[in-house]
Length: 291
Length: 296
Image 1 (cartoon, rainbow over the protein chains, first blue to last red):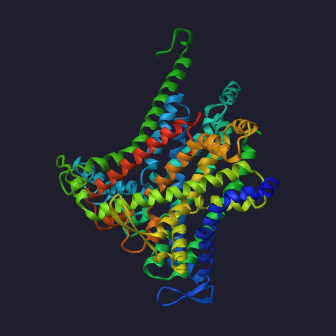
Image 2: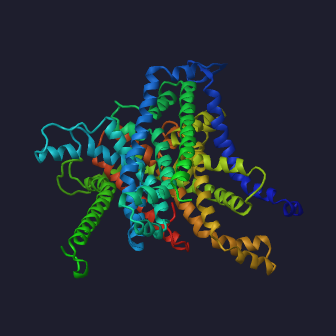
Image 3: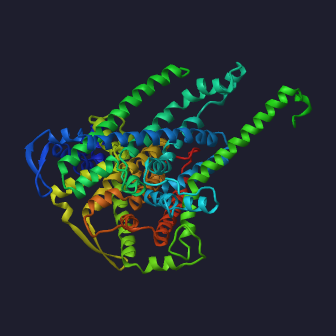
């Protein structure tokens, strides 16, 4: 046995991998397979499945009622990624250009909210945004700035804000990592060649930070598309995302095959987005980059 | 213009002013960014001390919401459930994830490497809602969902569904593996080679050289797993069945019923836990010689 292991390193690798691989095979890969199979089955009246193959669940996904929610979720995920990039990039740049000690402290300061419970962070915004009793509206009215409460809650604004708040560190950290490794002499070279501030950014800084931007965008887009807690709390029951519909199918309506079909489609969109983004992003980096 | 005499041409002075103004605005932006992250949390904590049922009108300082929290048996039970699930799932995930990291880092190319990579990294990428319903369907079909682990934990009687622990291990293995792998990648292999040259057995080399060297990574991975487990709401919510609460599941239920400073108090408690864990993670990271702050 020992001799066999000595001769075959692949066998040793798999021996070390076996426990975690088996765990994930049984409790992750097989469940994934079950969902895919379920999505092609019929439901029975008591919340179970009937072993009859059908494409009905996928047809229903494109029913306007559900498809609208799907498109709305894509829109929210897009908005979240967009605003996280818009506000997060300058912040990442700010952190990356500080002296080393400040920089490390700032990164740490970013990790603390990031390590804080997502539910707690969402609840914090609930107390701020609620229409009549939310802190922002109460204060703005007390100070006489507004007469009527602003529509801050139960809408696209509230959900997007909650998601940006929750996931923006995922955008900032990879961009920061890319910017931090940026070779300062390249910037000096560009300035010596009389490049304007904008040109330096567009032709040097942005292309070199692109790997971080791509990673960050995916890290924000994917969980936002699958959001459940944020729309459940900040959507005020009026605005649903695909994660809420899936939840309702599994815990409320007991239509598991349909819920499975929705999940499979959601994961397919995520996979597709990842592939497209990495492909175009890769080419952009090659074209715009220095190499 | 406050430029030095040598650069006192008007254009240089203007240039300098613009530079200073730009820097000042940049600082302001950085400050606003951090205010955005911290203010909501700060306000949440402040109103946990509010002597009123309102979480938007200040009515004086009180600790009564913390008292109410401590007397709420359901919250206390949920707290113990959370800690128990986190301890058990972290222990299992740390051992499995560390072994996997060693395999992936030490044996770079082996048959089936791609399959191993995909299986190990997919749980990180997949959203928790997808993982939650997958596990729900699996536990339902296999009947594992019905198994309850009855245990005395620090004198408290707990009844924990096995399915919750299994689910937590499943999403934590990958995170532990990533953190430990990062540590292994920057480890000095020559020390292990030296041990083997001195005829240390593979076991002895592992226990006396490899493990102590990668310990900061293992600790970092374990702390991350512990945090993720304590924080998880979605997967626990789906895999636990009715009647079993961890702290986040309990808080979600309370939020559904309305906003009270008691929720602020529980939230502040959870926040305190997070701060403690970040501090511990930082101490663990001190052991790393790496210059950069790691991703996790």
